[in-house]
Amino acid sequence: MERFLPLEYWIDDEWYVGTLKEVPGVFSQGATLDDLEANIRDAYHLMVYAEPSLERPGIRRKRTAVS
Image (cartoon, rainbow, N blue to C red; front, side, top):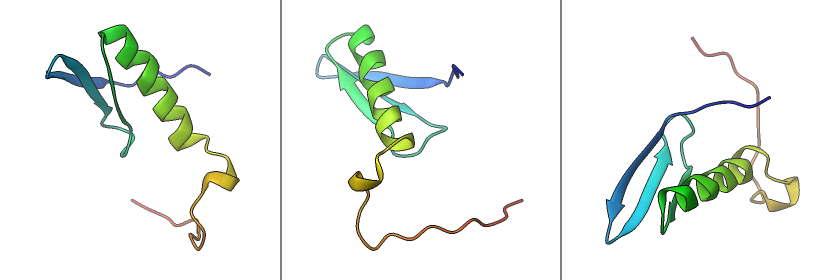
């Protein structure tokens, strides 16, 4: 399922730099806005769908309720 998330971006030393505020830790950059969008998609997939082998050792997970 395709999701649409707001991309916040700015230009820094001629690079397009951006983040997905709704997904903490997803940042990227690109020479053009199109490059940034492609790179931010890659960063999102790495953060959300990371292979277990890429995870840091010793990190534990537990489901918890939030309100």
